[in-house]
Length: 447
Image (cartoon, rainbow, N blue to C red; front, side):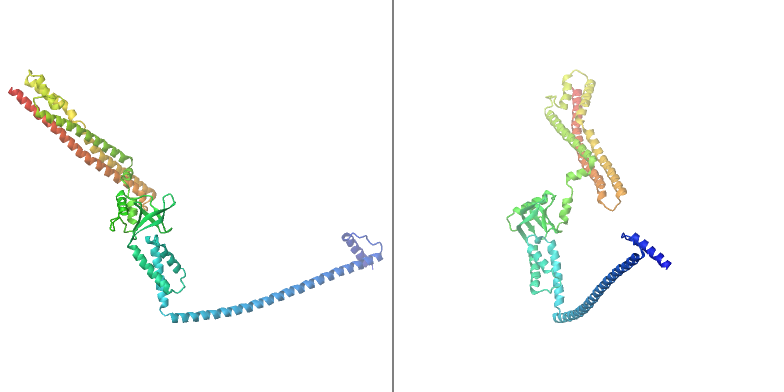
């Protein structure tokens, strides 16, 4: 009994900490309180059990519904699979019947589709698509569905497209077309298509961009010789006229456009090339000047020869003859010395510039050789830096080497001819002076 009382007191002390209700004062109140706590706890437990039971029933119902849906889905999947197998079998049977009934039609359809695709590719690269764009659009629509059997209308379309393409390839057609300018803007211009080779407008070549299917102005045109031929062709009213075409459809035209002009060739020679040109111009100026001077001197000397007794001091021969008339009383030796001295004084004026011309004619090829060495050095530097994979990287040095050599030879050859011509003219005048001075001495001795 004592142990029961101690247990109740312990439970009472625990309940005091858990509940803020007043503590029982005697044993009866403690008993009533214990029964009350038991009933309330029992009620709470019953509520929890009822709630768990209800939730269990709900979960069971959900599980049953899910199993039912799974069974329905499996049944539907089985039905669909059976229908799919049946449809596959039906399609196979229909394809077999179609193949049996079509015979060689499938082969014909394949060949016609291949022909249509090939023609579409050809028209996509053809210049006739500019003035006949309908052909290309019809073929694109025809080749859009590759599974469709080719009809008679499709075969006729391919056949007519081939004939129209052949006809367009052999005609010269004038029409208006949108042309993309260098500034990127569209311009409506009158153009001429020469078969499948070239398109012209206003005396210029046009480029056909196969990606955009548009005509474009070239950034750079070939030499004026070809452009003048195009202008003459455009303005010709004759049914037959000559013009320039590119049978490679752009390759030769591109090469002509990339061909450097004379000024660009000179630029490739660098500063050495300009020095060589400067030397050549200087040499030509000296040659022209000396030829003019020698021509005047030779003309005056020839005039003096015709009137030997009438001395004129505007020419070397007249000044030499004047020595005799100014010194009639001198002996032969003194006159000979004065005449020789006069001839020596005339030589520098007559031979002036001859040595310079000869020097320039020798310096020009040497500078060309210097440019060759410099260009090869640049070439080897490019090879050491970038290798030999891209020849364009070496083109600059090679161009300088060849252009400077070419310029040196071009300058040297005319200078050599000019030097020979000037030397011949000056020697001719000197020879006349020597002959006349010798004749003058003979006349003095005879006197």
